[in-house]
Image: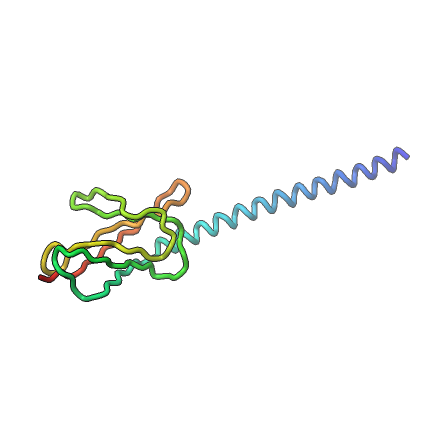
Length: 142
């Protein structure tokens, strides 16, 4: 009788050990998948292009207009903020916590000819920030 209990206990002990090994394996695999997905998202951001879409060729000087900026892929993207780069190279937060692949920016050309637009899209991944410059221009006319 004691012998049967010992065999039964040994079998259960072996099953428990095998289950623990499987759990450890699955946890490691899940961690690798999460890392791979995160790396894929970061790579997509690093390779992104942001394109300006203006509804006309030129805009009146000192008249506010909205221009759209679009990322070069259609699906939603990780959260990001958009900053305007000021003349002294400081930043001013203008849009935050966006997850769509486009945003609008209100701008007024200040001179005749090409007026630069300098923005920065900043993505946050855990403790890391990825900054994508958004440099473009619109034409100002009288």
